[in-house]
Image (tube, rainbow, N blue to C red; front, side):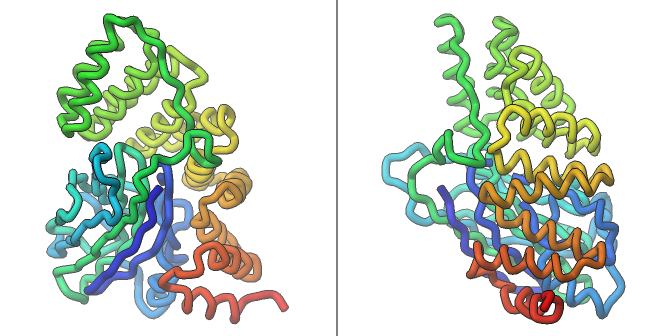
Length: 361
């Protein structure tokens, strides 16, 4: 289980999440932007307040800019003798658009060059699962060098597979002849040789098309290589081999989001929730997918469930929805619930100001 701390300098607004097991978390989105284009983004409240005094800056993910975003990455308390986890720092732009991905080691440093101004999410993945998400706003009028350090706390224990919010993955009882090849594939993945790992996993799956776990692992490797079309095919094969494989449905939904197939993403994520209704991640992502499909009434229930199951950032997403609908008293109530769960939130004063101004008396 991980906890996260951060420090920051430059023209930036950060947001704090505590996430276990996977993703999609996310902070507050500025109200002037189209609300339903905010998939996977939770801009901070401070950014929204500041934006009331200025016109919005559009994020054009394909355009190069002059801003460099970097930071030190540190993991505290990593268990002695434990297998070294695989860390990735992923940058997302507006509407969840993938910008860049970097592998990173403990005490390393990440760097994303030549970014245009706008809203971004920095996502940290451990062994392919999202564990932290930080929202940043890069300001064209500020410094061109923006720093966001990330510190994770590690207790050396993996998240319990039966814990609420975790998407549980079944293991396939493969023939002995394929076990050695599967282990080689996992070893390659741990060395971050994702190309080799993808090929080995696909060899295992091709030899035994019923091996849903191998298909799913191949999809994850292709995702890391940003070969999303191949990843989608692998995840589909995994769900065909085992229709009850919830993790494959979840990951298929993620890939479809990256490919901007939001309707398809909602279908995959709905199946994931159907199979594991106690998954906070699946509920949160399904809620976001419904928002992207302009089905806010369906989104609310899943966001509420995600919050109940341990994803406090869902309260922030609900607050944005209610605020946009003019129900500021309900937005204030969501902010209150969020602060009760995240009392050390770094923009606490801004949220408390909003609560004071809008709470129903």
